[in-house]
Length: 333
Ligand code: GRG
Image (cartoon, rainbow, N blue to C red; front, top):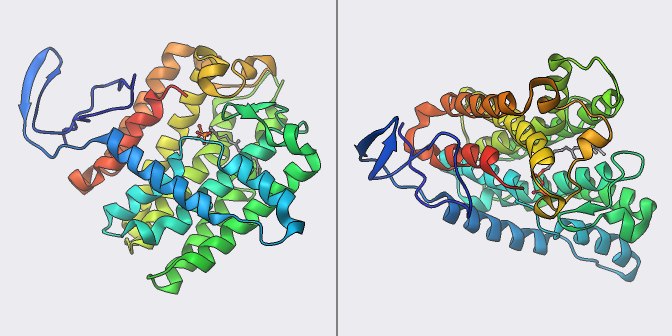
């Protein structure tokens, strides 16, 4: 499939000129004329971000004065911005298999709740100890460690309840499957296990590429995999097609982390909305530390190419997932 992304994020520049569309474009010095379906990634992402923001806003309200503090703390982090990449991946996977966005909406909300919970906990003094997130003071800086921990716990718990309560119009078995996928992505073989290995590897001299890959397969890629897999499951995709989506998602998940490590070196705190240069400060093993910056950029591109190959057979219907794969390594924050 030849891809031309017709309209991209401001400053967006794919590493290898992907392209969709009835377009004339330059590749290897030759001007090619290609007829295919135009796909506007920037508009797609804007639309899904706004849809997600509205759903998130509606998802949490304090129902009595006793819950005002915890709900305020949960809403503070949930509504603090963020790229909303995981919900976008979930919607794109649902739509790939003919599902409607409304069916995936509760799962998209849950994914962002789980992700936000992990950011709140990651920023705590006992973990990364950071005071800036999404361009704002971190949750514990405003609400204290005690409330921040509990706000994260409540958000994790609410994510599952939200999927179970709000998902409509699909067989119950699919909802149960999604709850299983989400649960797996958070546990010992997901965010929590990845984070433990990451923390225990800090300051260690001999962290190998194998260990680094294990950490990020679980700490970062597992939730992206859950996003794409649950979207596909909700739309009734076959096990075989879900497996292809998972392969795509694991690759973009690793690429996401490689890009994150590169941005930690190359971008400013202002651009990132979080403290830049942190990895070096705490002597974290990263892709640039093991491979150097230039090789890390090549590896990110290779992972994205492999991700795209895993879903190539879905053709133009996979355009949003293909575009999001490019975005993941071209993003500026
Ligand atoms: C408490 C059960 C339990 C689990 C949490 C703290 C923790 C365990 C895991 C840390 C997971 C973590 C913070 C991974 C980093 C993933 C990553 C690259 C985050 C940045 O994601 P973006 O760029 O952020 O999508 P925005 O702000 O745009 O949403």
